[in-house]
Length: 117
Length: 318
Image (cartoon, rainbow over all chains, first blue to last red; front, side, top):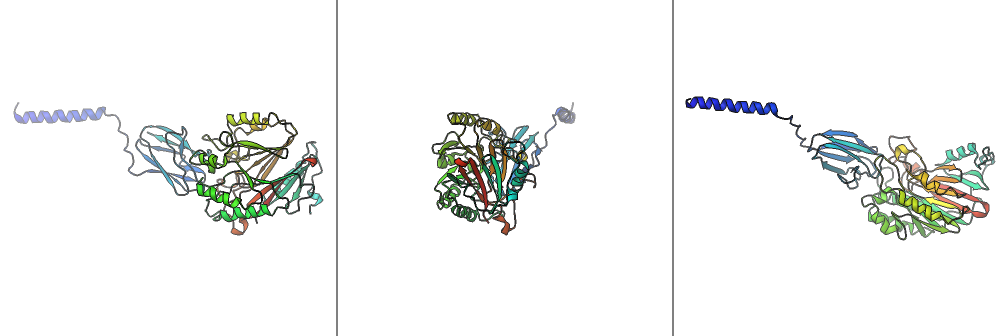
């Protein structure tokens, strides 16, 4: 085989390898958005109450009420904001997939959930 | 002057409560009502009538609640002035109160300067002793550490305690700690065990006053206006012939009587909140400036043992 032939074979093998790897690749999750996804705290509720995001997404809560609130995971350890007065914000980056239930520790009737895929 | 039509005269269930009259009494709550229990008969008088000589008794004290020092939103941009007005109201009562109860949410954000301001304003009260219980705003951020340091001397657990005044037993409870997602106010097993021990040696004729921030009755659970294990606490007080439960938290006056237990919530000195379910949320209610002080207030309570009477009076600030 001449030099041209080797090059052809190499190109063919390389192309096959790429095609093979594509066929066998697991579906790649959408990359997390560059800017935080917003949850609004208003009228003693979290909106949206359930938020679904990609792994690695940063979620930002903003308190729009005239009353202070908190954002605390149900286990009280995964994430826990300080007290959020009007217009204060809290951000948390979800680096692991899972379902995260949370509530306001001051007004425990206020509950929400972040689903991380 | 009280009118005869405001007196409760019928008692079909022989429990000292005339249902029709009681409803009338309930309807007035919020605009100022005096409800007097005398010899087992509940009588109600419109606010504004002078406390009768019969109602004035051996022990008088006043309750203030939800001063929310630090709050500065449109519903009341000057909570200092309204707390001062509450103290003026207390100082002007015809029967001088011996002490004050503050049923929580002393501060808005549990900042040291907020507590300092309230302490300073209360110094001008004719009643020098103030007994506190915490509201959820007073334990924000530090699980009540600062509250306990300031107000918890001699208390147990998260700040509960009891004391006696002229034969009346007072129990201050904490139902704003360790709240669980989706739940209501909570007393918890430790506090319940303490209550049982605390009242064990008391005779059933001892009048008992229980005070706590969140109502110890189910006012409106949808807004968190209730306490998960309040029924357990009240079961421990079953033997007593007279139990008065004083709460705050809902920023409006409300009263309910169940057997020997009278439940009463005081107005806030800071801002009103909507009636249960009458708004999207229980947030501060903005009312026209000239109406604000009509929705804020204080409560004073009189005991007259000889008369078997208990009087709870709500007074508006304006």
